[in-house]
Amino acid sequence: MSWLELSLNLNGELAEAVTEVLSRYASGGVAVEMAADKNGDLSAATHVLVKAYIPIDGQEDEQRRRTEEGLWHLSQIQPLPEPEFRIIKETDWQTSWKKHFQPIAIGKRLLIIPPWITIEETERTVIVLEPGMAFGTGLHPSTLICLEAIEDILQPGDNILDIGCGTGILSIAAVLLGAKHALAVDTDEVAVQATKENAERNRVAEYIRVESGSLEQVKVLQTEIQKPDLIVANILSHILIELIQSGLATCVKPKGRIILSGILVEQVEPLVNLATDANLELIDVRSEKDWRGLIFKRDLPR
Image 1 (cartoon, rainbow, N blue to C red):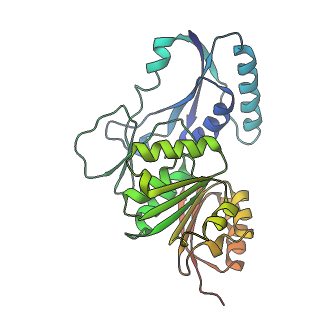
Image 2: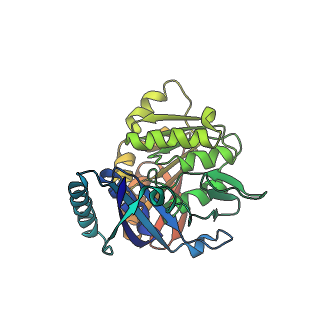
Image 3: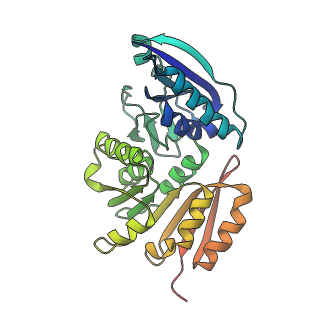
């Protein structure tokens, strides 16, 4: 079989949003090629190739139309380059997108690698992640903010709640860094399955409970499990607002921490005001390009 390959050259900030759109329509899968240097320096990964694959089986014209339509809608939010198309053979499709993926060093302790790369002994904590599976590869500034914040804040033995888990990267990182248990939830079944597979891949599945749903499902589950010491939510700002309005603060232990990311500069003030009214104290603001991560502590009830 031959395949129609669609590719866009993007900065890392746009990669995950484009990947999410393409994954809806390209039945052959979506892949991300990262341009990190030979040492896996994330600062070098400013541009990436996001590629989608459409089988040439008689339905390719419809899949291409729907894909281009999805990208057009996304471009109304933020400008995108024009996608490039080419036809490739089966053998090229199976290998071409893997050869440029390099390990990514994040923070002081983390290293993300794909399953097909073998690395020499390292002092870093290794996360094995299949790129292009679901939202959350470590490329986006909001994901980077969360990973570095978890590395700094997490205490050994903490329980965490990961809302909007995507690939499960945040839950996996937390467990590998010393968390006792993680509850990971997402409304997207693709993300739920990706988190389960990545947890197995990193040999931490027994420490991560993965469920379909969001905050309401968490509240149901908290009748049988204890509240977490740390909550992480790397989601769009309007969903973070909905979570706070729905009682996010009550789902963490008193004096527990909440990391919120996926926030643009202009969205910080209204979100902080809302969180303050919900009895959350802002204790830190993390910055990466135009994105912000807010770290809160749950105050004792007044």
